[in-house]
Image (tube, rainbow, N blue to C red; front, side):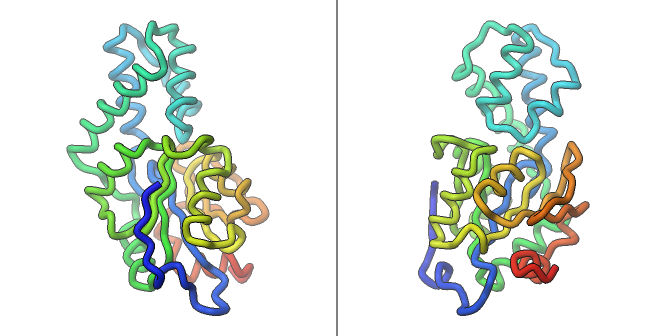
Length: 233
């Protein structure tokens, strides 16, 4: 976890219900879920294996260990999980070096959160090396804290990443809003006790108690997030 959290960010306005906002990265903030699949297809092609398109829905949004492990088992590829992880990260980095497109509405939302000094964290299952490379493009200044998948003992769908982020801000999970695009991420956020905005990128996500589903980040602003946490949305 990396953090640059000045006291002015940790100290929230008295009576304000929303204490912090946490965003997932791939498929939520940046349009890169397809990049991961491209990397997986290319790496396994080099290993002599063709990936079934149906597997994309299985591996999307999950931690590297789960996704890579599933593909090794499904293909029978003669490679270890650590070896495959390096190859996938290398191939993904090559792709994002050519540009990282933001999801619609992401730039406006990030600018609003910064302007109102809302403590904001990036919480991703991607490894630190990938997060830092993406933020070189998106802008590190948008986040006071970032949590990577290889910096926690248990990543999504376990709640540890979001509990770590809340702890980093000294915030109560029940007063934090999380924006996620996959069922895996939603499960992690809800298990942590956070309020959730789901913006499905691949598979549908149904509304539920404490969870709102929207079509795009263009529907989300600070007032929306405050209303979610206070129950007035």
